[in-house]
Image (cartoon, rainbow, N blue to C red; front, side, top):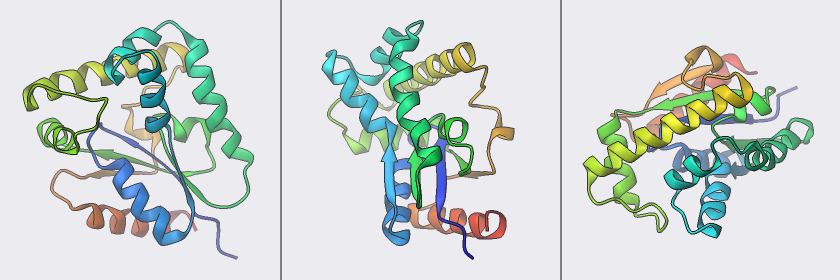
Length: 183
């Protein structure tokens, strides 16, 4: 019997997580749950961008609890899904977990090109700086609240550098790793 396609994806900002998750969700006919969208919406409620919101919620675990409970519910959910979240591997340990990395400058160029309405940058250099700040804030918060270092690659079943790959190539590498290890 084939195991349900249940994966978690995390990684560097601008590494292509959401885009590749959309491709895989369509291909496997599973739900794509993205915490980034939920977090951006919550930041917008407070009139902040995601970097400002991350700083704002440092030391406020009640905000993270909302995101945590949402993810934790997926551990007992039937069927396949893709969870795109910094801590998906932690809250939904039954998933096959991926970390997607990307060169910081390439990642910043991707994010600037995406022109998300609530993530405005003055330049690619500004994006690199703010992405680094956001990552540092998240890493600090997750170490403090959960004792988890999201940059420890031992947390993940598969690590893929997306810097020089198309999203289709990343998707294929993910499928290959999943089929080789998760079935």
